[in-house]
Length: 202
Picture 1 (cartoon, one colour):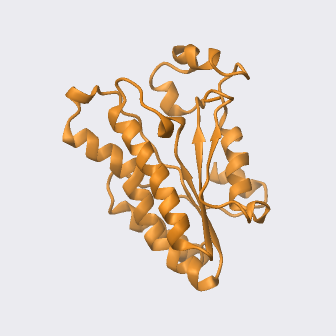
Picture 2 (spheres, rainbow, N blue to C red):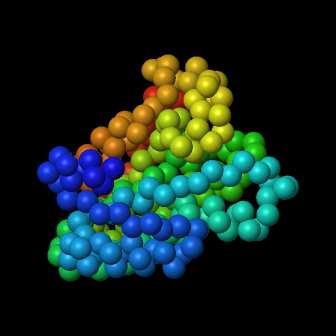
């Protein structure tokens, strides 16, 4: 992907990091600052799924899900926010989920982590303004590697049937919204969780 971005005449780097290992968060920040010297936008998009029922959920799995889905975003924000504050401007976009708004059997760690991410987004907006805006995206069913790991969109046909648009979302659907929230076009939007779910939660 980096090669494709560069071939199009743009700049990009990548950093291999395991967001369950919170020490790797620093690697991302250091590599970015070394390459570019500043940070304008932070997109906290790391995520992992957990499908363990509540009574079978281990503390190890719980901690791993929260490290990836929530704590890594907190730590990255704590690193990045001073850079944005000093330059007087910045935007943060967090990936929440339609699971941020309800509960589902067998997804306790994932659902709880996404509720936490919604709260963290709002806390960021309150505490980091006015220089920094922070908003969240709550995707519905999006065709990702995570979805493929549990059988692909076909395994979740019920969710598709419940969407007025009658299709699975694609990465581009989220990318366009993230770009809007990161840009000055959304300069009066702050602390919001915007659903991109094909109408699933109407």
